[in-house]
Length: 142
Image (cartoon, rainbow, N blue to C red; front, top):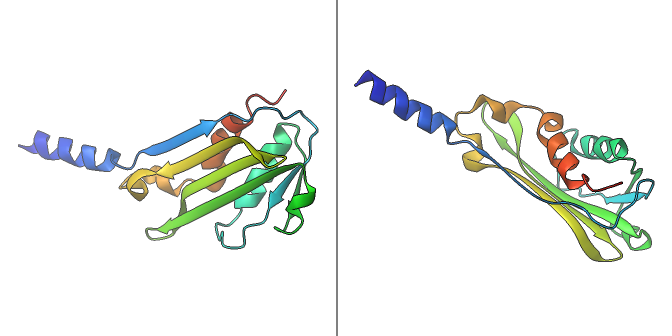
């Protein structure tokens, strides 16, 4: 009986799986400046800094712009990020969309199923969650 209870508890704890879906960016060369369109609704601390750092690591300089300025940029990145709360806030969902001349050339989605459940990994920082997602998104930048 105790084994069944432990097994059930383990299944519940594992219920907070991470889902990552990435369509790797195409048609972008190192050195291309990417305009990141500021999303003032995102209140996940450090999110934009982590994104900028990830793009820089792949040889893509970034510039933060408002929506009005985005039209003058050939390559743009739009994003959303949501946080959930369980004793403290943590990143539970993020979406990145990369655009070139108005056409989507890549996308990445990070999602904690069930808001992370009982998994302690849900409290990992934005950098540890988003770095592998950004690396997959920009894997074809050469």
